Length: 350
Image (cartoon, rainbow, N blue to C red):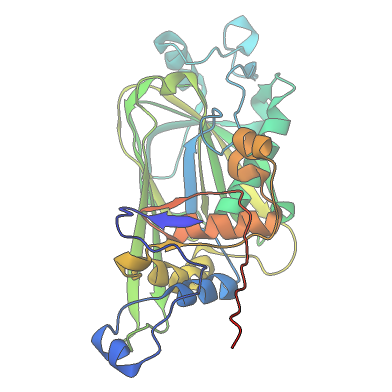
């Protein structure tokens, strides 16, 4: 069940159960959606997700928790202690890494240093399995089947004070590349907000307007108190632009993974946004009295599974629709409720 805030006066009904059938109502409210239209849009969307996703990977959200003790080791740079890198990185070690690592040549990367994947060792045996779970989480967020997405470690990035990435995009020569996954390792810094930008050209609109261009932006900030002791992530499609604001103090360390798509019909940010456009519009334009919609799952989940795993406990088709509602419904709250529907039939004798 999805609800929009506030709920005062909301009418609880089966999704699609209320619609306006008279021409007068349609003429009076040409831009008003209905529950039926929401339901139809949810069924018709062939790609259900967003152009990017991000947040903490510490178990406090639906994203899986990544180990904070990696056993990170950088070889071939002559670092002290055999190349072991404790996290968060100290100022002294940061200075040594910057002196021996390679400065990124791309002009959009300012004071950003990189270490090739061949020189990176992660000794915690739980790391790979945890990243695999995170990739599955990213797949649901991006509207990709979890079986069709995999990640390959590309490089390690280090940004000290003054480091930033100006707005840019990735040019991928490999046709299997879907996008990028950035995992921020425990880091103590200030500034450095991440912005992801997606521009989409719509071929048609719902009010017979001309074709128009629309840019959407998502922002992520990982420098609040306590963030230095956890991992965070951002994933996005290749056909978007991104930027990292200037780090004003401290340093951040990131692992960059390339997201690869297996199988035919590789999605893109533009394809996903076009697929989700009708659902976004129909949710945004529901009248207040219909700002609660019910989507029956025809399955009862164990309470313990929902409490312990949340949305991760849902089956694949149910999870896909839940992610679609969360991606399309800005300001909406998703609830999963176990309930029994009771039908009562009353007949009157003549």
